[in-house]
Amino acid sequence: MPKRQKTPKRGPATLAIHGRERRRKAHHAVSTPIVQTSNYSFESMTEVVEFMTAKGQGRIIREQEYGRYGNPTQQEAERKLAAIEGAGRAILFSSGMSAVILTLMAYMKKDGHIIFTSDCYRQTRDFATNFLTKFGVQNTIVAPDAKAIEKAIRPNTNIIFTESPTNPFLRVLDLPAIVQVARRHKVLTMIDATLATPHNIRPLELGVDFVIHSATKYLGGHNDLLAGVTLGAHALLEDLNKLQRMIGAIPGPLTCFLLERGLKTFPLRMEHHNRAGLQVARALEKHPKVEKVWYPGLKSHPDHIIAKQQMSGFGSMISFLVKGDVKATRQFIDALEVFLITPSLGGTESLVTQMSTMSFFDYPLEYRQSIGMTDNLVRVALGLEDPEDIIADLYQALAQI
Ligand SMILES: *Cc1c(COP(=O)(O)O)cnc(C)c1O
Image (tube, rainbow, N blue to C red; front, side):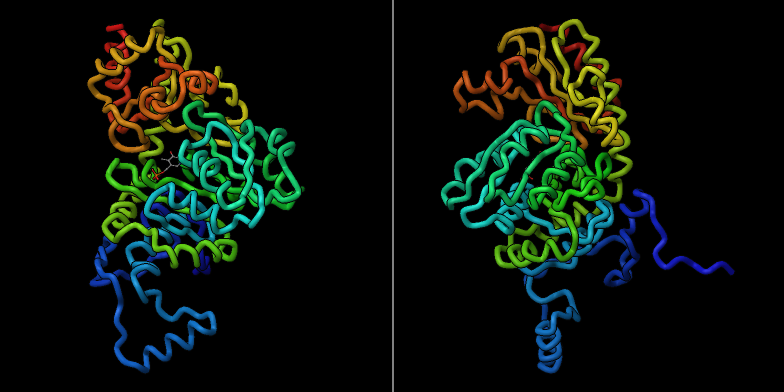
């Protein structure tokens, strides 16, 4: 009989369903049980002493101790996320933003400097400009480009924080080029890859140190939970693990159950998102009432070549300009029947937003226009409905302006 390989390399669908290894679940359950408890008991003082002694020596003889330090449902979701990303470790948080902020806080330095790329998630940018500066941590926001990043490096720079693809213009960064710059200057790299997901891009394999996702989006995938995750090499994540245990910004057991369940269909859902994204982006580009479309899978996108090299699919978020003023744009959105008016992305339902009204309402008009948030900019995040129905809905709504 041929000798069985100890850890066979599994495909993405198998990893999404079983993780790297099959573990016995409580009560022989097939699905991951929701362990709704805040703390865990010991059978005897002997067991406590054994546990504490091992812990002091850096050995973990049981994972459960106190709720803030982790929950079995959470640990199962973390193991599966690490398997899907090809990471040594995954650390879950109660939201994408708590993953972003706590990862920055765990690795930033006193009097240090962090480089962010423009067109990144608004709350991340606001945290950098309004909060980090209060603690004496400087930041520079540069164009999403390796050369601009290298130019911004200072002697005290210790983190490059990027996002790819960006939101809403879906700029795709040349990650190997950024990694080269970071290594030359001994700087850590972090990427918020929420819009790409591990299905479409593999930043760790390209040399990035930390990958962050808002699991609220494609990973959860059903518009029904909030969570965030940071992934990377096991030892590198230890400082973040300590901070997570201190702060306890973790998702509850039910959220972890929903996330872990959602992950089972993650590769299937992504195949659909990628296919629908391209189909709908092409249909929009053809329409006479659409002025411009941003989708990395289209030849017209400024980063199409890099996107094709780095990504295996382009997701289902599409930004476009309708031919019309603020009133016509709102009329178009109101006429949509399949889409729900709300931000977010990556779930089962298709969503639509007018960026200038929903994400940038409180910014001065001049600033909004300087960063391209014009009133006729619409962002759609496709769900899992039939792409033909989505196209028909967009076309009937465009016909009304
Ligand atoms: C949604 C999102 C976040 C924030 O995630 P939450 O789960 O809403 O906190 C961060 N980055 C990107 C790119 C996002 O799309």
